[in-house]
Length: 183
Image: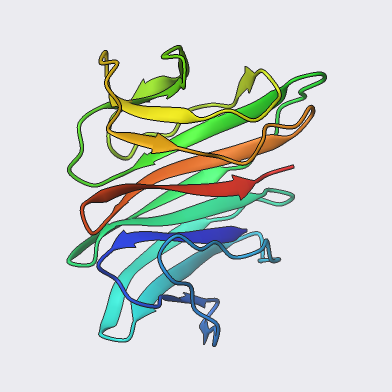
């Protein structure tokens, strides 16, 4: 599994996993590398310097790859668990996105030309992978059905056969793009 800190207002966050507190913490927008975990139900907890944020029991299946996203606000944190089942993407790139912006309207990701690339999502939503053209181009974050950008986002170039997860979160009232290379 790996995990991502997208929780607005939380400081350096540490993961408590299998009863051990990891020394290394993550700042907002950072993601851990994948690490091994036992295939069983486990209690996973998160804390920042001001104290405990969230604890949750999670079932990990054998041979599964997971991304845990800690999101929301420090006062009201949430946890999303996403199974990382990578698509077969010959000749194109695959991207998916997660709407982790608390108290935000339904959002869409569009190309810089205004073409909707990724599905409309409500806050807390997770989209499946979708094939997109390879290359480097900007994305616009818009409210569902709108064309005017709330934020212009510049992801890593989309490589043939590659897979990215894009997480849209809020930090101090501004939208932020967190990028994870899945393949």
